[in-house]
Image (cartoon, rainbow, N blue to C red):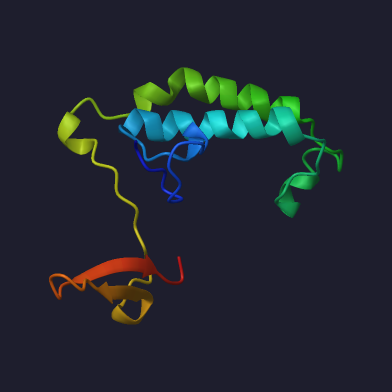
Length: 120
């Protein structure tokens, strides 16, 4: 059975499984946000204070964000380069240094294995 990135087998939400393609990475995040908004969405002021004046200091409805996400989902696949060699998914850690890497020694082979990153 495939393991979720949280380490649980089975019962974990499909939103948390590793992405199988660049397209899936873009689409899954938007779908996760849509599911969150359906369940918990409520009117909020814009997060960035400088945008609040533009919205006349009125709370924005979750439906506004839902519309933007739906438009995003329509174009998400076009954001992926046509050249499949560019589809490799990579996360950049700007502060990566030896003191931020947690390793463990494998008892059977005496090799080191990365088990965590700090300051993520």
